[in-house]
Image (cartoon, rainbow, N blue to C red; front, side, top):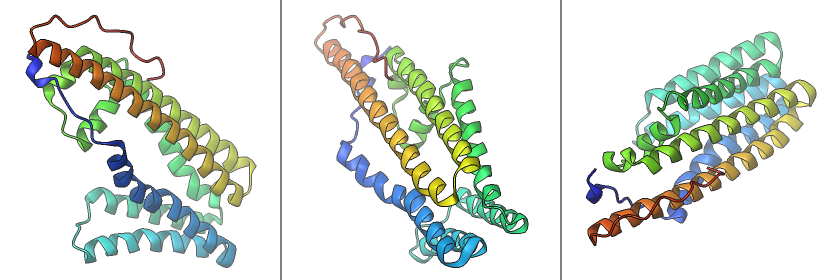
Length: 229
């Protein structure tokens, strides 16, 4: 394998946070705040209407600013609309929140299934967001890292689904929205920290081998991969 193509530099953590934070606020925090505020003031139907308006308002804002609207975003908007209509017809907020929770459970199973198939879903998602060199992805340490991270995220999404289902059927909507969101956010943040730490450690070893190869030195034996990743 050509060592000259193994090296890869990860963007700075602050840059990653600046990139992810606005999307997190827009996609997670703001919808919860909009739904809860409308629920408290206008009841269930008002909250459902506000949730749908938030999604379509986001699409209109992107279109007006010339950012383009992806097909996935349009499908997500249609999905929210169907969920809202079903929830309004049944007069049950549980119906509105149950579908994405079951979707989270399916995502967990997809991450888990990708591990024994040796086609880690975490690697596919990473390469969709960041162009990673093929030689870098073929490195055995990198392959093992993505397998472990896929297993980690499978457990995270499974825990997310269990917490959501339990709270959905045992707690009030207000408790579900805020406590569940806080717990899931903390769990996801911990998994992100472990993932970034593990990837940085993996990069250090792979790039270290690259430097050794440039100087004609035999690469050191690979130490055990981080157990948390």
